[in-house]
Image 1 (tube, rainbow, N blue to C red):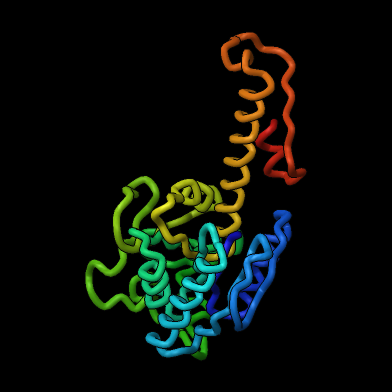
Image 2: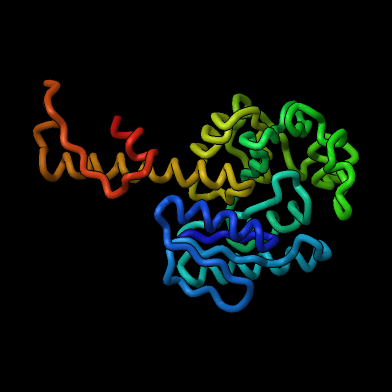
Length: 254
């Protein structure tokens, strides 16, 4: 089971919808215990407008409930323009899960929302020059992503482009200029890492997992049914057996 922790209902429902499109049985819950009888369980902690300490407590509690319910891995959904208690919740979940690092990729290039050189752009404009400057609860007065996150001291989070990324402890915010960048960040997933970010990053991670599973299944079938194929350099007809008809599976087979 995959677990998702979102700070509002729309975020939880959005990722549930992505899961459905990828053939997963998905549920969204607002409160109560997490029951592990689904493929994707999205928890709405309703913490977008909470004080930071309360938000952190709820997020950590949700992580522990999902882990107890059998979640193989947990994704933290954050607002694409970093509204809410992003750092407080990511830090609390990372501590609750006992993982070494967190990779945060909030931008959604599909909607023109990108991060370059530590600054946030929306459809080519700096975010403080858009309607987000007039947000009633989290007005964006600066395009600096660290200021948007409320970072008050050095070392709390590092902002880096993919070409400069090196696995490290702590929280890393990945810069993206395109959907291809998001997909490349998804390939950096490791077992000792909390993944957090927007809807596009979550979908990219699912795609990467699908391709890895299909590749593993093909290799396993070859070794079981056609052991001599691995030793032969001859090119002939090939048989692929896939459990999905998604576009991503078909692209992998091609």
